[in-house]
Image (cartoon, rainbow, N blue to C red):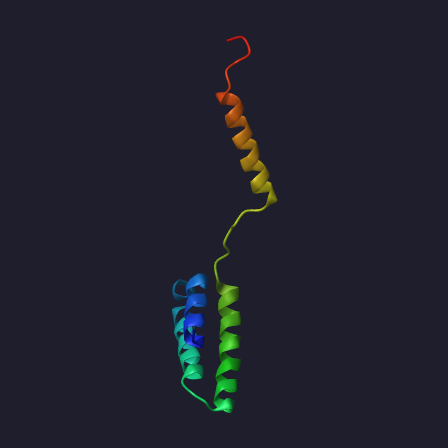
Length: 92
């Protein structure tokens, strides 16, 4: 997998095309430049700039809520209540 492929995948995960399309395009161009050269100095310069842009894009990325322990407890409680509601009443 090339640097450009990895950067493209990360840009997609960050939704960078939506938040900062220009910076995303520059990041992808820099990644392609790294893949396209064998000159160590050119790679180092492009990598430094790419690192800087990717750091900025990560800061701008929308926050994704994946849940936490409180969400897990709430979900478990709701599942228990649903099971209890499904049981027949004691006098029936």
